Image 1 (cartoon, rainbow, N blue to C red):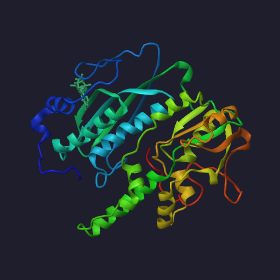
Image 2: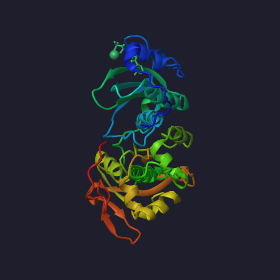
Image 3: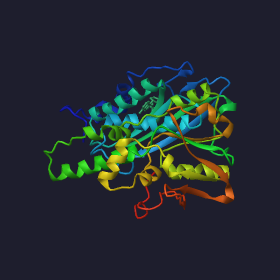
Amino acid sequence: MMFDGNNHTSIEELGEFGLINHLTQFVEHYQPTTIKGIGDDAAVIDHKNEHTVITTDLLIEGVHFDLAYVPLKHLGYKAVMVNLSDVYAMNAEAKQITVSIAISNRFPLEAIEELYAGILLACKTYQVDLVGGDTTSSTTGLIISVTALGTAKKETIVTRDGAKPNDLLVVTGDIGGAYMGLQVLEREKEVFKVNPNSQPDLEPYSYIVERQLKPEARKDIPKLLEALDVLPTSMIDISDGLSSETIHLCKNSKVGVNLFEEKIPLDPTVINVCEEFQLDSTTVALSGGEDYELLFTIAQNDYDKIKGNPNFTVIGHMTEEKEGMHLITRANQKVALKARGWNSFEEKEEKND
Ligand code: ADP
Ligand code: MG
């Protein structure tokens, strides 16, 4: 495992309350809406007149993460990011989180400290308060569950079901990086198994490895949209891959889509590493996942407001439901959009979400 140092303090010695106190001793509050945080039977939050959005995610060792190449600090950070991303996808502002962990006795205190260092860094960076959680033992692996709370004005919450035919489909940032970062990390893990003395040179891959290990949720986007006076008609975050998220928007909104292959925003590193791995970059973008960018639809009338903004790429438009969901390829062919890409991923196992 990747927590460093030679100190292995047993958690048993500390006891459950000792552990909770130890892990939460540096917790700070950034939000005035947090009335009472850790230390009572429940936290108290005053969200005034705003609506509250709540979301939760469960991460299980061996299913969602592999500690052979994910440092615990990054894991803690990412566990918070995946939840904040869901809050931002509602066009809301994240305010508080709770964190529950189940730990087996193979983890010393120092390992869990690393995990919490990542969690607290995420809290500080995103100005959210850790207000509670639960701590228990597990017979085998590590389990982490994070719940995030956010707020939004009732009129500006954006759900998945408001897209209309002719709306534009827009994505933030670039996609496919997190998936290719995972490919690189898995390759290095195999190399390491054969030759434990090998030192991987991940420098050329730093952008995509970072996209995988230290994703950043798009806290800036709800604010930016507000500043541009754009209220999306529907929105979702990209945790599974562009095609599956596009399909979610279509099915929830009862519309179809034409998504243009040539418009999909890819970082040059993604294009290069796809060549190296002999993977099709469109397939990777459509099916890769874990980019935590936002995907949303806007009315055509709002196009001028986002035009030229480097954060946004228009990748398609919505159609009548009966027209179906399609990818328009570079060769101008119309291919049915499938949840898991449209060719080489077909034999692959379903991912666990
Ligand atoms: P209870 O007996 O009411 O479940 P606990 O003893 O489990 O309370 O927790 C005591 C306090 O510490 C509570 O405020 C709880 O929310 C908080 N807490 C427990 N575990 C964690 C954790 N892993 N991270 C953050 N806060 C925690
Ligand atoms: Mg408890």
